[in-house]
Length: 174
Image 1 (cartoon, rainbow, N blue to C red):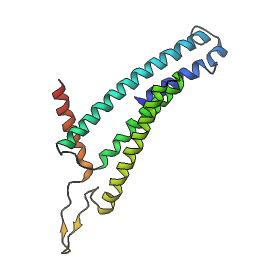
Image 2: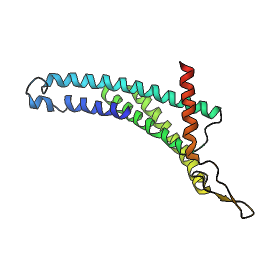
Image 3: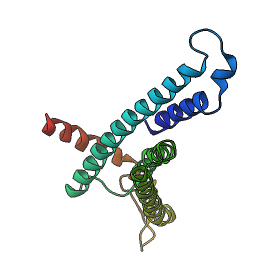
């Protein structure tokens, strides 16, 4: 949703500020007046998409928090999936802050960018040690006696626990 919001804002900016539509000056659509309407519509649609995206990010973090509280979600590769939505929403807020010259959107963009860096640092801090020890992919390990122990459940299977918690959270909301 963040990418769509940013794309709509770029479309509105290209239509209105670059004067491309006015240069064509043909038909009903490719003129200077519709370009202003396209810009306003694009910004409004982008704001709707950003609002919907924030709503879904809140729901996903609620599901993650619930899974962590119930101890059904452990560290694994699933945590890297939290970076993309936050990054695209930060991009959309940056674009909105430039288009509307809004200090509120600038503050929200800065907050999301700080959150993005924190998520990235957290993911890096657990991925490197888990990769080196073999826990991340469920690699069998040898114990002190030289015997091979069965591998624990690979960390990448934790998405099942998260999806079960998300379904349970959805049922509780209804």
